[in-house]
Image 1 (cartoon, one colour):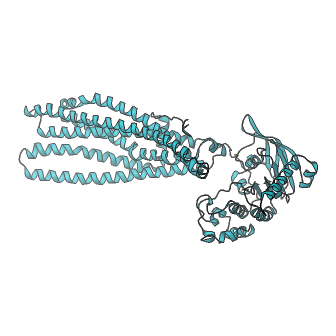
Image 2: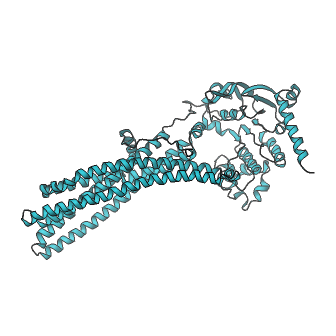
Image 3: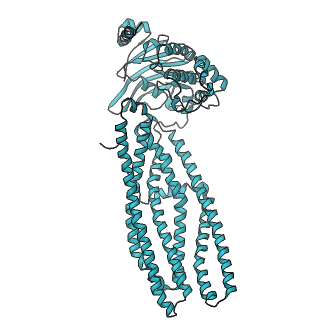
Length: 599
């Protein structure tokens, strides 16, 4: 059985001009820093080329002639140049690292902003762990590209050109002799690149698979423990972990072969220079200083070649990461915003579903030609068996999805023509599964919305009768609730979500089975809170417990995605249809529960 979520697509690792162009475009806001870093790197490279020449001058002109004063002066110049190189390299490193961090800041902000605009279907297709990998691991790869990739590659090329030029100027015959090691070096480098590219691509896939697996299993850890799946989960994670380890070890093996080969060829080049150059020195056709300078240039020649191999691998990894990142940035919003959005001064709250049909999958329709109207201020319940399409109507109303046919209108305007931010601000949803952020109860209710004043939050807490249990928390209303509100019971979290909805003063309220998971005592409290919450607001109450909807003005009955009946509680019971059967079933279940409950 393949590891969970190991469906990460393969992305290119070859150098793509289109991607390189887009990557370079990221540096545009910081072009001054980039230019300064490049100029400093060129200055460092040119300064370092002078060291072997100073060594040659010291040997041939001063040591050979026993000129102590000249040698002391040259040593001073050498030391001063070292300080200059140190300062330039320090400035270049600071600029380059700063450039990388600024680009990563901008890129993460763009990614996070774009992710928040994506619709529900995107997150249904893509595991959260994979999306997190884009914003963390892949962005970090690009940081490495900008800090030790683009600029450093340019510097390595400048150094190589300078070294080759200096070696040819000093003695072209000795330079050609030292270049005899280049063919095997090129062959080894190409082989190394191929093996490491494959290993790095596999590593990225395994990391994304592990992140997706960890996110899913840590989120559902209570279910894993309840069903005693710790062993199976551990074995599954072991497979993912071992696959990642093996891929990483393959890259280590490639490095373990390549670098000794480069060192061997470097030593071979020095041996050639010593052998051929030494005979030239003995025959007095080459100075000793020139031979020493040649050896130093040869050693410096192989360092940028080694670095270029690693830089190229960074660049290859960045191609795969950048394609994943740009793929996310280019993901279209499946719920498009209108060109000229409607922004009314005041929302009345009228809702009209006009022959609405919808399907999550083409061949599996969920809603069939549903039509009804909710007047401003009216409270309407939607009931039906599981899978009837109740929650789908709520999702369509807030435009998590768009209808496939028909239209939904609010105050006479198709919601596809509304300013989405304005529409959602005026609609509050109380879901069955309440989500709470890490932070205090006050912050979870107000959500840092400047229009939701502290006084309104306090009033909402009192109105839904949540103050008593919140004030019993260790720090009262300022108690940190931590991830998903783990200090609160299910019923308490739902009361908190009621307070959140009330504090934002919506014109339209959607209650999506908000009392399905609470005990009877909490349900009584919620019924009282409901009366406060729906007063003066257009309300859609998606109900699982029919006992909670007697106070509504009208009930709509859905069956297999179709509207089959509507009316008041008494009217629907009198007709003896699906609603009456649902009500009788619930009443029967309550009686059986009471019989099982000891006195």
